[in-house]
Length: 335
Ligand SMILES: [Zn+2]
Image (cartoon, rainbow, N blue to C red; front, side, top):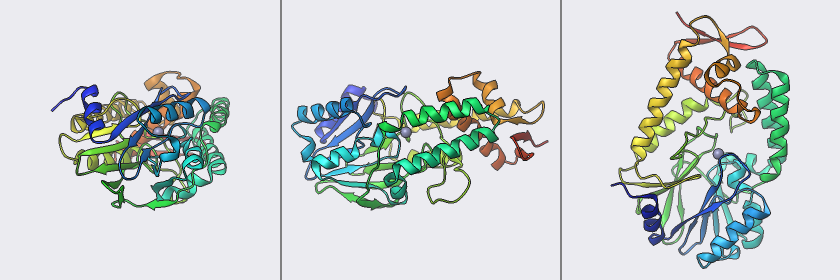
């Protein structure tokens, strides 16, 4: 079954699910919040923290016969500003319960300090990957300029993988699917075969396996792409014909084919990166430059995350090892 996106959205509306596209200042364009009507009026994600986004959210709620005050529950897919920035404002209007992965609650609540830590972590990772200091610092300042689009989120209902969230007339299963972020959470309505996937799976672009600090506060970094592929494998098992609602873009009704294409492109990119190591060890930055040239400063951390992710896969296969001379970390092909 392949429906057009319009048909999928019409079908969803019959099931009480409405997509609310919210403007963002980010390159990705609009972010999708979803309204789930029923005994408990629910929003999945809220949009970035801006007056324009708040207006867009309220207007679309009104168009569906609701107001901000009606919201009973907000479900969070992950901690990125474009998805959660408005959450506390919606709570101020509605007193809604906020449900998110419990393991991420502290990171969500302590927004300013956690953002500082994440930026410092990113700078350190960039420097140890050979990214010039001026680029790393420029990116850090871009990141702090964007910080106002996010905000603290106080989780009042801590979820765990496998939990179910009761909305009265429907129940959503909580599926932990890290990779794009350390906390990606999918909400699955088994009865209606509908899922809310955030940025875990996007139809038009592959979302980056962004390297982050582990959620549990342990030192080091996430092995984001390794986790991502594992998460994809699990999501692929959702039944054929399921409709998945992404954080950006149109509904997905062929998730298996889409996930298979992501697997295939990861495989191709991995082999290509390995070939770049034929002439000797190279840093993450050198590899990113060979793959994508000199990208915009704002993309530097994303391309680095891609490279490191693929190196992690190759390392796990025993085909690459890290050479750390105490300064810049380089990757070397294992003969
Ligand atoms: Zn995201």
